Picture 1 (spheres, helix red, strand yellow):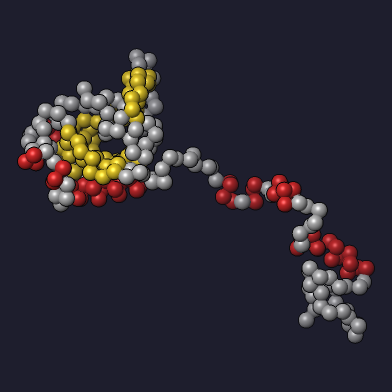
Picture 2 (cartoon, helix red, strand yellow; picture 1 turned 180 degrees about the vertical axis):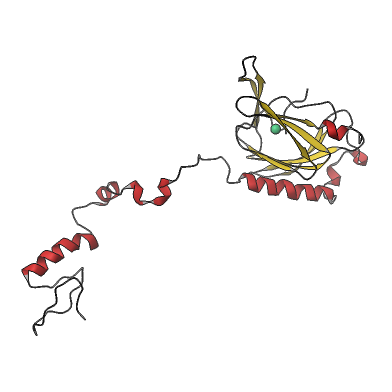
Length: 241
Ligand SMILES: [Fe+2]
């Protein structure tokens, strides 16, 4: 078998088959050909590792052609938090957290109530009971991602979309996630108040990293959002008014 690099020769004195890294060709033409090919298959001693690294074109790596996502302070993603709240809601319905409910399992009728049902370094999970006619102030969740699952009743959410507040209703079984920068206010949906006044609106919320702060906002008269204060807190879903 002859090398595909060298021109063929019928000479009985032909050298042993050359390889790209150990050429043994004798003809000038072959030397020239190998000299042209060799840099493609060997490492030049003239190129130091540092120099070689600087000659790599970024466009050679297809991964670098994609937009680079900003680094997040958690390895969890919205889909993870949705799953966590879904599993938390199922556990609540199964009675796994009955020991965390108020005595007798009776939730306060006049004020929002919450209990943390799970906490670790990456995520905290809360069960929240929402009462009629009370809404959170417009808030974000600082550096935390969030998600919720509605267990019973319904929630209304007003979310700032950059130019205005947009409303949506989340009914039992609905889920929502909110990335960093999500500004909203949340309340028990009016539809959940009538006619089932005795039925609580319950939701499970997850935050990652665990909540440590929230900012509050107001919509100005000329249609912008103004941050009014930031507070350190590990309580879910902001102050009530
Ligand atoms: Fe919130």
